[in-house]
Length: 409
Ligand SMILES: [Zn+2]
Image (cartoon, rainbow, N blue to C red; front, side, top):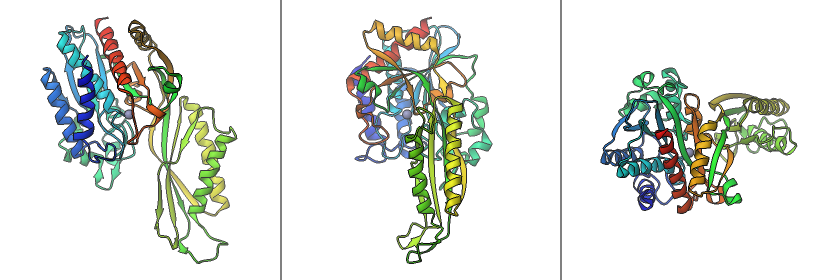
């Protein structure tokens, strides 16, 4: 493995394929920066003799040929970022998988089965608020109707894909087939501080949390800011009480243990300093490893919404923007990673993942495993996102050697 080449590849993507240089990394799927990243990645994959192709949603695939047509192993992560995100989330997994293949090529390693590389599109949901769209699309979790229903200011997902030169109509024939694939392996930054606090360089994920993203609309009555305080139907005050009381549900242990709930986005209409707003819409992201606990937490939040809006005479509606099921990592794949870590004298621990990953969608079709490396300070989705070069190299090494093990077995 070439450490410098691995780190240089991360630099290449974060500097030359980035629409917010100086403010972290912004590389939304189907953007100009994304186009540049695909061109660079395709060139690198071709330089080691691999065939590449892009599917209807924009996942970039490549094939490292094996000696038999036994079920193949898949590796990769996502190429897109959030707005003003970091340089490691997703990109690190793409580059680590690329480096494993470059290294195999240099060694002249011939695996028994094919290794498929995938750089997934739209994991972050930056375009439409629907996460893991690339992996969901090839695992049968979203269809033409679903894509046409996803809209942003520039149009719907189906039209945007076609305008980017993709063929979403091909997606039904581009599905991952459970019989053809024996494993999906991804390496990713942890996005939490469990590994850092434990001083352990490698995390072997046991489960990925299920998540739901909802948008809540609170509708009141707009009025002049000088109007009397009594009898107002002010959705902003209502929102403030809801946000405060949701946190109290957690403080009072009403929400299930290890449940997480985040209000990440708020839109105020008309958003003018001298007017009582008529509508507040905001998102609530909830997560839990167990589906029934996730639903139970959601019910508590819905009850609270009903109670507070009724008390304040505000009407409300709730819409689901995104959902992904929790998934358990395959125990045999976890054991394989453990063996590789032991034989390389690298310490590891088991942990759960709160954030969703492409492995969660892929886990609906094939056995999956996810390797974590420490995030410095536990921060991610911001320019401060960081992982030490030593950890980046160790994670890539574990990925590569686990791939090798899976392909010679
Ligand atoms: Zn990610």
